[in-house]
Amino acid sequence: IGSLEAHVVGKSDLGLHVQFGAVDAETQRRIQSALLDANQRYAPWIRRTQLAAAGVAEALEAGLARGEVAMEELITSDYAPVKRSEPVRYTTLASEFYARTLPTILDEHRRSPEAPLFVLALDRNGYLPVSHADHAAPGDSADGAWNDFNAHEQRLFEGWTTLLGARSEAPAHLRAYQFEGDCGPDDAILIVSAPIRVGGRLWGGVQAGFRY
Picture 1 (cartoon, one colour):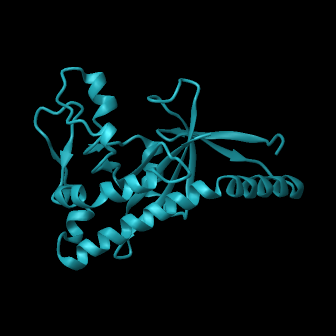
Picture 2: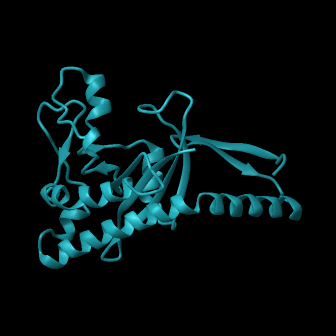
């Protein structure tokens, strides 16, 4: 793309806020070309994430239609802490429904040819109702660090990068992340998010991670 003139105009929990100066036509062309290249390069990963989001949305809608769960139980900020859990886990009135419904869908997409490291559904507040079995330990170990890595289920992930993906209503939201865990310290992960809508309302999104 080349060099661009920019000025820092603010700072918040999201990071530095930058205002770019005037961008000439040739630079705009290079920016558009780079965006198109990224969309083409990561198209299979974007499509996989969108398919997973559609599957989750369909399951949530079906649960509503059958009366297994209510809209106010799905879209909520009422999280009940689980006693003596560390890190703290939470339940909601929809927890049993999520446990019955989501793992099969998410695991199916995790086993897809695109080989994502994870495929997770987080609500718009960063709440993760279910996780993959290898990261769904009950979290009752005395080792807090072990719990933090192995007990992801029913936790709130309120980091700003996670919330950006959970609250994005764009068809796809991409962000690079230095992932700590099964990957080495120098491994970069591309996290693709796709929105989940229920009854026309944003529930949250699927976030899938791919090594690149």
